[in-house]
Image 1 (cartoon, rainbow, N blue to C red):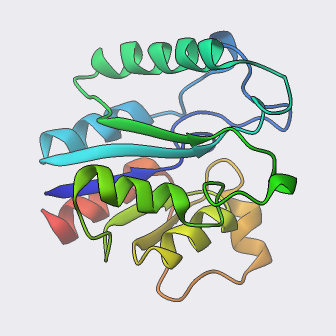
Image 2: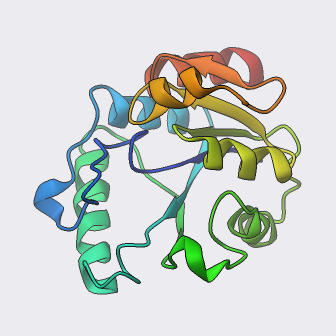
Length: 180
């Protein structure tokens, strides 16, 4: 099975320091939905792994998160693509849970659900914590420069062998070239 793991905010959609709290605030990054569709058409399953501490902070609830994801699914289906599963951590960093990236609990759950070893599975994020979680799970970390990606790159300290791509479109092209 070919699988790609994506962070959501800053990779698929525009990010906000104030959190994405409603479907109206969820705006896809240019070419991101087409890139997911291209990966689907190339035989890849797509899984989203996203920290959503806005839930624990009381900024939105699970039903609102589901509405946000329904909008994402609808817009993605219009491009001929789909997401196979979404895993999310609702906790704040202070809770020190195992599911919140940079810990790899969400990635372990993905591996279990899909009965796959994540070794070298392409995993795309825009923050250091994404890349650290991917690296800890044995996946291939890929940094996109969208969202917080430019800041993350400038700060350095990326896991060894992290791929750096302009955006999800460039990452999808490289994944297809290397894994298809």
